[in-house]
Image 1 (cartoon, one colour):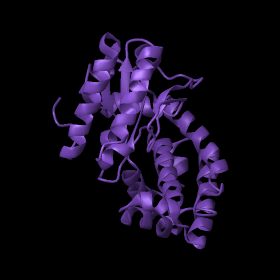
Image 2 (cartoon, one colour; image 1 turned 90 degrees about the vertical axis):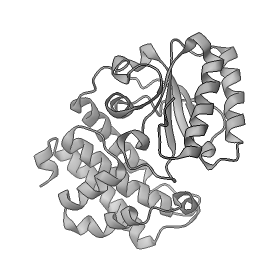
Image 3 (cartoon, helix red, strand yellow; image 1 turned 180 degrees about the vertical axis):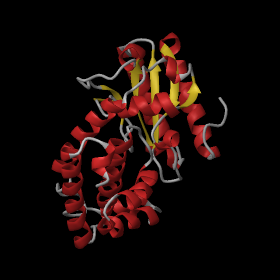
Length: 272
């Protein structure tokens, strides 16, 4: 496996992960890939590591038990990246095309040490990212595994996500009404979702934030610029309360973004 990232410690961890998974799954192993920020761009030392393992068939009970033990072992490694792996195990027949039912895969959440059943990775966005810019760790070209994902499929999914996130946005956090982490996540995620609606493809949060500074009303620039400029140590912000004024403006931005997306379904409308 060639070095998939610019971080030697992460590359070593990914080699360990792939070798361990391959050893457990044997003939049931098809391939392993990076998607997310390491695929679409702008990953840094604070990024989570979004992976996808493609299997030939469903993971059996014995394989699952071995995978659980392996992930607990890797999570305990004295390597910061080891606690920020996030991804799913996906049978290749279920990966092939967008699944409207979004049935769950075996999923490892960021910070977790055990696999659970979750539909987090069963999305058009993940399939587009994997097919168009996924990083091959081991296995066939992702284009041979995933059918093309259309702009219409991405837009439909993103619009639904924007409405779901609007319900989640005001929910209290460990830091109180809203944490610094959640406030920044909401702003840049809605920039990214608006960008996908406008252009029919997926980009990084940073690239979408830069786009939004020029594409959206200038009144939002002072809300978008701080998360772009203040990236270091994002996980520390999970326990820090957001500035109340920034939190209030963030909820207003969420409302505005959903309104724009609801009433305008083309790029021209989004930029008006």
